[in-house]
Image (cartoon, rainbow, N blue to C red):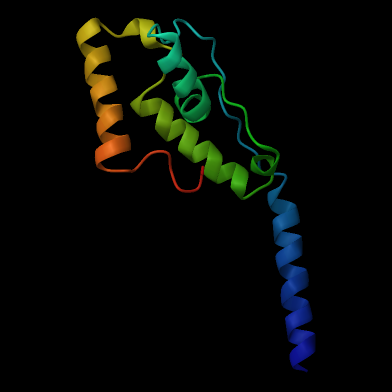
Length: 120
């Protein structure tokens, strides 16, 4: 009897995960209007470590295409872009750029909140 309940539960979970694959809200990919214009060494670090969530140049890993990981990645990307989007760097004045870079430094070094643990 107990085996039958576990079997039904597993079948139900597999079916729900399968159905969840059909729910896929898009991740907007607008054009890059003005990329980060700092030193090449810094830009390379940012491209490698930050651009997936903080630019319009997102490249999902293979496992991020499978729900529920896709929904979590999408949420992080939209949240990250709302705080800082390197694809619209040209829309910030020099003071805003310095402030954003200072905020990035604080979040990474002082508070150790970036990159998100799920991303690592």
